[in-house]
Amino acid sequence: FTPVHRSFAEQAGRRPDRALFELPDGRKITYRETADTVARIAARLVADGVTPGDRVAMQVDKSPEAIALYLATLRIGGVFLPLNTAYTGAEMEYFIGDARPRVLVCSPERQADHAHRAGPDLVVETLGTKGDGTLLESEARHDEAVDAAADDPAAILYTSGTTGRSKGAVLTHGNLASNCAALLEAWQFTDRDRLIHALPIFHVHGLFVAANMVLASGASMYYLPKFDADTVVDLLPRATVLMGVPTFYTRLVKHERLTPQACASMRLFVSGSAPLLASDHAAFEARTGHAILERYGMTETGMNTTNPYEGGPRKPGTVGEPLPGTEIRVVDAESGEPLPDGEVGSIEVRGPNVFSGYWQMPEKTAAEFRADGFFITGDLGRVDEDGYLCIVGRGKDLVISGGYNIYPKEIEELLDAHPAVLESAVIGVPHPDFGETVVAVVVPAGGQEPTEAELLRSVAGDLARFKHPRAVRIVDALPRNVMGKVQKAELRKRYQDLFA
Ligand code: ATP
Ligand code: MG
Image (tube, rainbow, N blue to C red; front, side, top):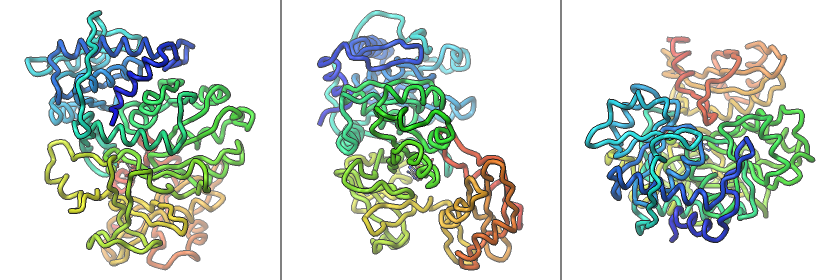
């Protein structure tokens, strides 16, 4: 077992002059330079009093030094805790109070907001996007790495908070290293790859999938502050892999310069973090000749399943098969009994990628694991005739109307297939007779003005009566977070009084 920071150090020794980061201004930062920054930050953290097991929290804009901070934290046995840059006042209060970090690294502009937190137990450091800030003030180096065991904690990552308050998932060195190795193998990712990195680094996708794979393999990345379709299209001819959330692809397919020629050097487009629209999958393939590879993962588990890189079709609407070493099963939510293929049930996962538990929530942790070690993901799905997993939604989004289970995805797929519809979200809202009833929230396709009656008519023929939406609401856009996840809780709130 080789922890990620050691794999990085090995790569830095092997190819010191290789560009690890290429920035939008053309600047390149090599493996050697990054290793030097890691050594300096590690010295600073040690001087701040970080000892193994201490949390190092970071809330900064994306920079190469932020990745060095991550590696430095792991090297000295600290527990890395990246926070969404959008969090402010009360949210930060919660995360800092919950995680009790030894060091908080914030952007120089926010230093004043956090100054009051500094004290005997917490050091506030700053890190800007230009290598500025207190964290890099001194030249001292710390080159020793602690001997991390596979089950030592490496990071606490907070979940996206889609279904409730974010929970801190404690991930071990073994979790990160094993998932990274499984992905490198599954996607044949090597030091020859040049990844377009346009994801945030406070989330599993951008940090533990994208960045870890580059760091551990000795590859290079075009490291962008955020997703911008023009910039990404310009980089495609020099890159080999893009990892994105579905909204990247929704925007790319509309881009006039997205052509097979532009993608000539690309070998892989990955999508995850939220469901990819089947129409985007088809449109992207028509425009580029590339079938987007969709995979499934979560903060607590890293990546669980993937469509095949080769040796089988990449099927839209599915998330493929378990990664090597990971087991997936679909069970009856109540009894925990495995269900036959084709039946919808609770998705559970077991493997070296599965986290050790929620930070300081032993009861919640115990409630989400089965006795045999399977983690209850909270997602619902079924296994199709090829053994591919299909996610039908989250358990919490299931609509129960008059005692019947209704899976929103079934209705969403029918609505999405209507030519006047771009996308849709189906939710349950309180109803005096049925407990809950179905409401469809629909975004029209460009220039289209579908009516409620027309949409209802188009899906009615394919749905049992109890699944018929009782109302359709036409909106300009669905509420989404930065990872492109539709915020159904917000929609439920918006329409909670429709029938009440
Ligand atoms: P919270 O747990 O706080 O409610 P969250 O579950 O959105 O937030 P994440 O860990 O970022 O936080 O997201 C994991 C979830 O994202 C999965 O459980 C699943 O519902 C969804 N997801 C990830 N990849 C896919 C995919 N390819 N298709 C459909 N859903 C996906
Ligand atoms: Mg979750």
